[in-house]
Amino acid sequence: MKPNYKNWVPNGMIAALTAGTVVLGAGTAALLCTKMNPTAKRLLAGTTALGAAACGGMLGWSVYAHSKFSYDGKRQLSKQIVEGTAEYITLPEGGVGLDVGCGSGALTIACAKKNPQGRMIGIDRWGAEYASFSKKLCEKNAAAEGVDNTEFHQGDACKLDFDDETFDAVTSNYVYHNITGADKQQLLRETLRVLKKGGTFAIHDIMSKARYGDMQQFINELYDEGYERVQLIDTTTGKFMTHKEAALLMLGGSALLIGKK
Image (cartoon, rainbow, N blue to C red; front, side):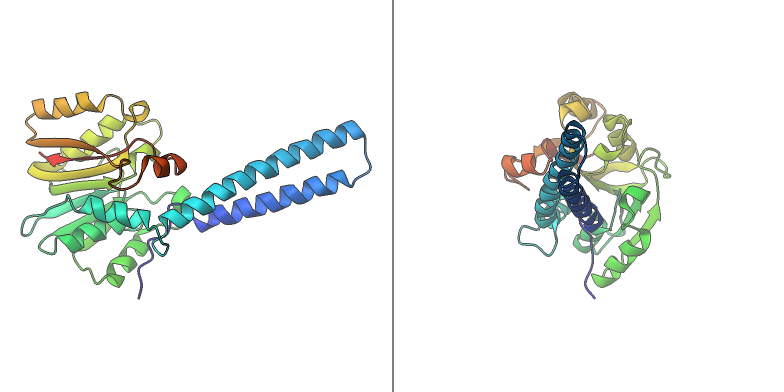
């Protein structure tokens, strides 16, 4: 059995944009062939044509991004990011790690494979906007990978249902920027709250200043609080992707926050 980690650009989105482009294009053609007031015809046909062009543009981007992210494609960017992030997670013998916003289980499973001496827990709220992701899918993917040191639960990244210093490692990938209205540095703090002293962390996201504020100040605060090591790595300079790729995929500002508490 082969794992199915899905795609960050769902097939349903591509299907919907394809249908929208076709319908609006056909509507434009129909309007141009209809006998009606010339002014109204131009207005209506122009509106539907603009809609078709917009849908077509979004469709083109979606197909491009889907191909870059696909685990079955040539680029396999999602896999590179997941495995690259997992490299920074180390569990002691019998240790337990947490993946916040596990989606289809890819990062949880990658960390578990790297740390057979420990165990990984993945949590996600599995909302309607990512309906193809689920706890059941995560469990199927773990079984397909032959991994038995994972477990998955529903949870909220804004308020983790764990005591302080519960885990030996914490990780996350492209989750917090999707949580609208939440203070991103506070989300980081909530994740780091459940990390044991001496534990490792690797959190990858779009950490632009507009979203996350002053991350250097945040790092300085962590050092002041006694963290052993904290580093912010720009992943758009060749580590995971190029600046051009990041811009085209709307992932500008992607960075990996790593360290030891």
